[in-house]
Amino acid sequence: MSTAEKETLGFQTEAKQMLQLMIHSMYSNKEIFLRELISNASDAADKLRYEALADGALYENDPDLRIRITLDKDANTLTLSDNGIGMSREEVINNLGTIARSGTAEFLKNLSGDGKKDSQLIGQFGVGFYSAFIVAERVEVLTRRAGLTAADAVRWESTGEADFSIESCEKAERGTTVILHLRKEDTEFTDDWRVRSIIKKYSDHISIPVQMLENVPAAKEGEEQKVAEFEAVNSATALWTRSRSEVTDEEYQAFYKHVSHDFSPALHWSHNKVEGKLEYTSLLYLPGQAPMDLWNRDAARGLKLYVQRTFIMDDAEQFLPLYLRFVKGVIDSNDLSLNVSREILQQDPAVDAMKSALTKRVLDMLSKLAKSDVEKYQQFWKAFGQVMKEGPAEDFSNKEKIAKLLRFATTHDNKAEQTHSLEDYVARMKEGQTKIYYVVGESHKTATSSPHLEVFRKKGIEVLLLSERVDDWLMNHLAEFDGKAFLDVGRGDLDLGDLENEEEKKAHEELAESHKDLVERVNAVLTDKVETVRVTSRLTESPACLVVTEDDMGAQMRRMLEAAGQALPPSKPVFELNPEHPLVLKLDKEADEDRFADLVGILFDQAHLAEGAQLDDPASYVHKLNKLLLELSA
Image 1 (cartoon, rainbow, N blue to C red):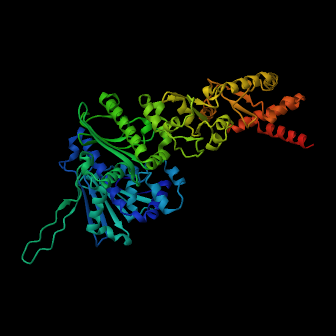
Image 2 (cartoon, one colour; image 1 turned 90 degrees about the vertical axis):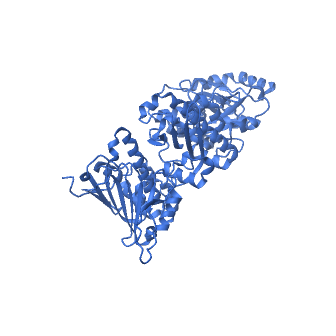
Image 3 (cartoon, rainbow, N blue to C red; image 1 turned 135 degrees about the vertical axis):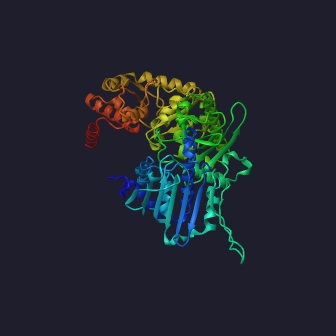
């Protein structure tokens, strides 16, 4: 097929669903289509500036970059033109025929059918160009990439339903023109005052002029009619270069939406200019909600990088560590060269110094937010807490700062919400307590009802309740806080130190001595399944529990690695018996060795279930339990 011929192509299935959602879910905020189209045009200008650093001919003797918007009431059209980088035929198909963001299928799964909620969800995806279909029944795009000939231009057209057409055309100027054929009910977007007010509201910060034809009064009789010229509607200065006192919260929020393509407002931000050995300006934002691809550690992330106000790249990930991948914003440096590349960034010592300073700035911003606005910080923690828990392993130098920002559920109130800081925990510690105790469970419910908590509840000692997948891994990297070591209550031999008086310690030793025979009998039954058997003082209500040996991997971590397909050496737990429990007393008196073995097996399997684990042989457990129930009822 000749490239000059008209070609009709179908949208990706996911793109079709997204387009329908865009059209039907966003009636309440239609005007955002203009913000998105201006933002795309601004990005196209930034990209041309960057490519022209290596090849000045791309400017084609037209170096003054701008965006122009024209309105036609008679034709009911809104046209937006830019003289940025433009697109080739292949780029048009890739950019306008698919939604180029990971996680789209995941997004569609999360739709609720409630238009208002769904339109909030849209903000977690960079929909950009597609928002045109909120107001347009048909969209035409004419585009030519800088450096190609006028005959290499492309015309794209779609009604936003099943397919789009694409054909070659002539276009003398480089860049992209988007013509929106508006729906009958959306004629308001051909009103000059209405469009100007939207530009001022959402796009005043765009660093190139957004122009419209000036309003020229009709000439009086005998006078020559003045020809309308294009004038800038926006202030056209890079927002981050302005003084903080000059920028309003509304302008900061509008700029956040520009850099993040998020429809919901930012939670908090920090705008800072550094002068001295290094000179740079940073504007960093905390989003209010997590994007769908947050857990894809390979997804595009990072800050928009400018050098001396010239755009260099999107997603410059070298300036913040991976655990802060949710931070959005801009960094503008005077110390890097204009031809900097991702490879050069990885080796530049100035980048390391900036990364260290920016990381501290984000952590300080979070620390201030946690103190000044607990509710906002909880919103942040709910969205990004699990990512922050990756921090202590990745960023050793800031481990203490990160630890202060962590939030946990605890036995203080038994709630699932993670609202308690380690500083709160330490302030509530019992007299004589030297350790921070925690328990790890498959879920909050499993952790809350863990038999390992029994002695702690009896003594009124607070325990952290950990149930997220990252928690066991986190605790391997958090050795201590405020001089207090962390202790897993389900690991090793329990030593409560000064929290246990001499009488209790002596009573425990006597119990261990008096039940030596029982321990040996149980050990003989479970010899292949356990490391050892012992009596315990950690249980007050349960008959038995399983304990991980001091050097072994936690059950949650083991399950996580096994699920990831990692081969692990076999592990045997310690089996602890509560010698004062009626079932254990009954077990001690059981003379029939077969029945004794069945009872031991049931207690061992029950201890597994209490941990939230799955049994290796559930049928055998059910068989033993049924047999026992029948004998008891006989």
